[in-house]
Image 1 (cartoon, protein in one colour):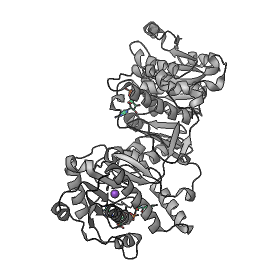
Image 2 (cartoon, helix red, strand yellow):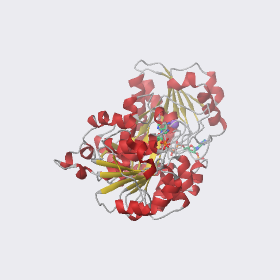
Image 3 (cartoon, protein in one colour):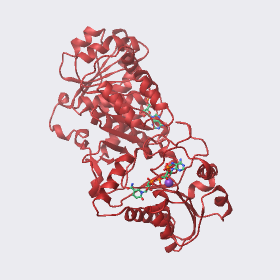
Image 4 (cartoon, protein in one colour):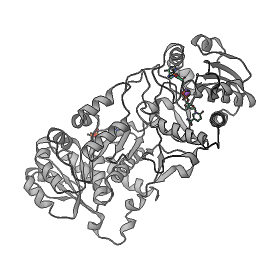
Length: 518
Ligand SMILES: NC(=O)C1=CN([C@@H]2O[C@H](COP(=O)(O)OP(=O)(O)OC[C@H]3O[C@@H](n4cnc5c(N)ncnc54)[C@H](OP(=O)(O)O)[C@@H]3O)[C@@H](O)[C@H]2O)[C@@H](O)CC1
Ligand SMILES: Nc1ncnc2c1ncn2[C@@H]1O[C@H](COP(=O)(O)OP(=O)(O)O)[C@@H](O)[C@H]1O
Ligand SMILES: [K+]
């Protein structure tokens, strides 16, 4: 499994400054490489030259646009350019000077006046976006977004669809989670060097269309050694050196333990609830087994034990009457992956959580255990993973959730890092753009808007069980969370629509069989 480094806009600017400061390359040269890379992508997809309209903003994103205009014109395209004035002496001004055709003012009227084009290049705003688009720029974007049926299949964005914040993934000026029909959505976005968080979070995946990452030779100027933020999904076609091997394939295939017995493959405990609530815990337990834990025990209340006589028969069942009984059970040091929350009931989770935490074992807190933790916080064990959805996140971290929902507020990764620091646990916020963060600042994004059928009752219970199984097998908590999220989504992809949560654990053998070693 290979993860892609993600860099923030500030990191990108730092790398660009380091490159220019070294004297090895100028800003204009980088702009030429960027613009030519976009033109190359256009020519790959539209091999027959046609008519192109290039829309250029006043900054360097616009500068890239003029380079694209020259490259397309040289390749035989009929190019029309609409541009805002550039700052005198800037790289963008130099790029504009190299375009010897006319530049009409970038206005809604001019966009409408010309003949329609085969493609439209959005080089209006990139990483320099500081506020919601306004005036003529806003009018142009509204028009392009409003007639998506015509424009979307022929729109190519440079770095980002204009208006998208590449750190947060919010389209500035529209509500979080509610994408109005006039937000600009494009067919292809060509970005440079590495993806940015905003390509993968919130509105990013919807508005960017296909995301292509072009290499512009910045590799030698990276200031950071190891990336603290990676993308688990999507996968990108980028140079291998930009990929980070997560080295978990061996664990998944039990290769590392040779002839080990079931306990050396890990023993997990899923704490269940009282009568009538057993399904969630059983889903979690089944997932822990399927992900390769050697032994999984389900611990309901004694009066619910009979309900759990259902398959899988591989499950051990042992009643847990109260906190003392749990402490007694956890005196068995072989139990090392705990899952508490799914189907547990809040009162029981509240009663058992102190004993579970005191045992200091790798543990997942999900569902009712998160509510219990929110109502009665307590120190968490060292290897602990919290797996809230948005509602549970708001219960556990109300102030941070408020920040997250604030328009123009901080990005999800930064907020999750704060939550992880505060709770001293790995925090995994579920959704189409799942973000995982740890107390030391490590973070990962898994973004897949193409598996909506994963939003089904019990899918979260399965995820919690998979993490518990991987913790039992000895994976460090952050890795267990990342691997589980990747496998969970891969199982959903493998199954396809019509999925119910019960299908997820059962899709795992096929997914694991094809899982890459590295
Ligand atoms: N980094 C790299 O390595 C490389 C970067 N490259 C390219 O440079 C791009 C970044 O360029 P950039 O910094 O000049 O910013 P850009 O996106 O053109 O916009 C800035 C201008 O827009 C304005 N503006 C802001 N918000 C606005 C609004 N809402 N409505 C209207 N205007 C608004 C803002 O005005 P101000 O806020 O100053 O008033 C400013 O004048 C990057 O995305 C990539 O394409 C490549 O060439 C090669 C390598
Ligand atoms: N639109 C979506 N696309 C892909 N995955 C999603 C989407 N919405 C939710 N998910 C995933 O589905 C799972 C739902 O978990 P959760 O909300 O805890 O459900 P439950 O409590 O019913 O088990 C999470 O893994 C989440 O990441
Ligand atoms: K753009």
